[in-house]
Amino acid sequence: MKIGIIGLQNSGKTTIFNALTGQDIEVTSYSSAKTEPNLGIVDVIDERVTRLSEMYEPKKTIYANIEYIDFVGLTGSGNRKDAIPANVLALAKTTDALALVVRNFNDTEVIGDIDPLSDIDSIESELIISDLIIAENRLGKIELSKKRGIKDAALMIEEKALIKIIDQLNSDKSLRDLELSSEEEKAVRGFQFISQKPLLIILNSDEDNFGANEELLNQISEKYKVIEFAGNFEMELSKLPPEEAAEFMEDMNIAESARDRLTKFSYEILGYLSFFTVGKDEVRAWTITKGQNAVEAAGKIHSDLARGFIRAECFSYDDLMETGSEKAIKEKGHFRLEGKNYIVKDGDILNIRFSV
Image (cartoon, rainbow, N blue to C red; front, side, top):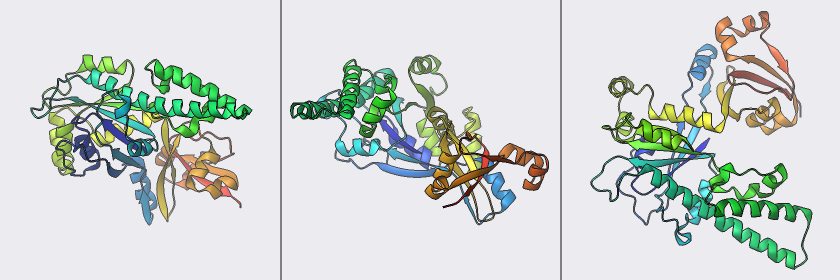
């Protein structure tokens, strides 16, 4: 999973990034000359993987992971000339979702009022403008092709989709809410429009007002999924030993770290789930989208497993913990052979039978 962290300059993006990754990137104001993002990969510490590893004692234990990309601060000008830089946009398109950090803290070095709702609108405008430029340029090329006599069915479907997209964007609306037919969606999929990606809002509060922003959170949640962090506090917590960090979290009435909360939040909004493979060589968590079948899960492990798929040996983590062993799983009738159309569930343990 890859999450891009975006926001206006001085919104505390890098503070949040440090809290999530445990890194110690300088958090002073981004230089306008800096265009390279900060990168960090963190394990998704799933207790189920830990317990499976204790049971199987494998040579390797591999957790799922999330890659966080902390992009350069955006201007929020809403001006075509200041649209998202091409190199930033290209990398942002590879993400599964965007996490927008908005400032809700006082800082004497930051100019401007605290206005999270306005900041969200500003960033949305930048995303929309970037998509609009791409869509209009492509539509212009299609019109030139038509003048040259190129007018096949695929081109007409793409043109129809782009007209819908441009109308949506010109109405100052993101593409997350636009419905396209399956043919239209396929025709424009390659553009990876940035305003089409799931957008998570991180309200970056200070210690004094953290937990006292219910009205603001409700306003944001009318349109977006939102979570509140006390960024500076969370960053300092990430540097402490677990026992000491737990004491400070209790004082702030925080049940889980920023990393754990954002991980759950991301899985929820993206509709992801985890299945596992187990054995003496390796215990591993794999991430797929809810609704994917056994063949698609097999392909996540290796393309050969999907290509030569025969059956999936399957049982659940919960049943294994309840019975205590694979032998007991079979004795109690919880061991199953599933076909290619089986919809994988969160917590399934799979072994793929295949032949290539």
